[in-house]
Image 1 (cartoon, rainbow, N blue to C red):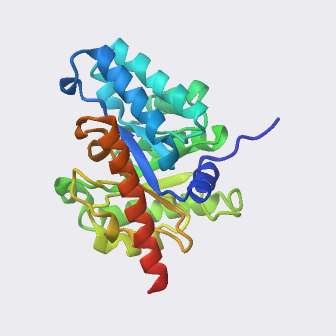
Image 2 (cartoon, one colour; image 1 turned 120 degrees about the vertical axis):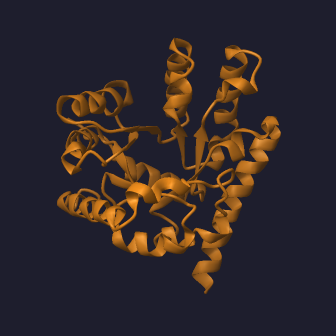
Image 3 (cartoon, rainbow, N blue to C red; image 1 turned 90 degrees about the vertical axis):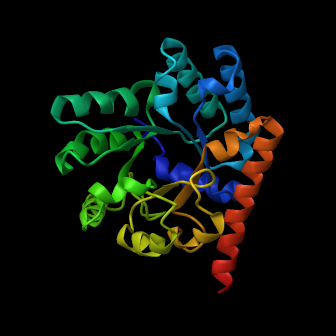
Length: 280
C-alpha cells in the first residue's frame, strides 16, 4: 500500500517551488452577487486565477453552509478544482466535540473524498477531543490546524492567562510523538492557528511550536501587515502560511484583476519581509 504524501510535506514543497507563503481564503459572501450562479462563477474563477500565487487554499465552511445544498455542492467543486491545481486544501471549519461526534467530524472532513486535506479544529473542549482528528489526519496524509492564539480581539477572554500556551505545549508534545515521520522537513501533521494580528509574539510562538506548521489568519481586512510576519517562519521561509480572504476576494468588489493584483502584492510583501529578516 502506497502511503499518501503528508500535507505538511506537500505544503512545504509548493512553498519552495513557487516561492509563496500566501494562503488564499475563499469566503464567498452572498450579498456581493446577484445570485448563487454568479457567486459560484466568481469563486471558481478566482481560485483558478490565483493558483500560481498561493501555497494553499482555505475555504471557510460557514459561507458554503449558509448557502444550503448549493453551497455544499460548490464547496466540493472548489475542493475538486484545488486538487486538479495541486493546491493543498485547508478546510476552515473549526470543528471540536467529544467522543463519537469528534470521530464523525474527523471522518467527514479528513477521510473519504477529503483525504489529504487539513482541517481547523478547536481544542477548547479538552485535549482528548483532538485525538480523533489527529489520528484521521495521520492515517490519510492530512493535517489539523488547532486554534491556539486566534486573530480576533476577544480571543483573550478564553486564550489568555496562559491557556494558549498550554494548548501550544500539548501540540508540541503530540508532534514530538510522531517521531521521524516528517523528519526531512521537521514538521508534523499537527499545525497551529496563530493570528497574524499578533506580530510581536510570532517568534515566541514559532519557538514554542517547533514541529507545527503555522496558519496565520488576519492579513488584509483584519489589519495584519505582511512586513511584520517574518518571525513565524523557519530559516529558508518555510513552516508557515499567511491567509488573506476578503483582502483578495473582494479587493475591489468582484473585480478579478484587482483580486489578482492583491494576491500578488501580498505574496511579494511576505517574500520581501523574509528577505529583510535574512539580511539582518
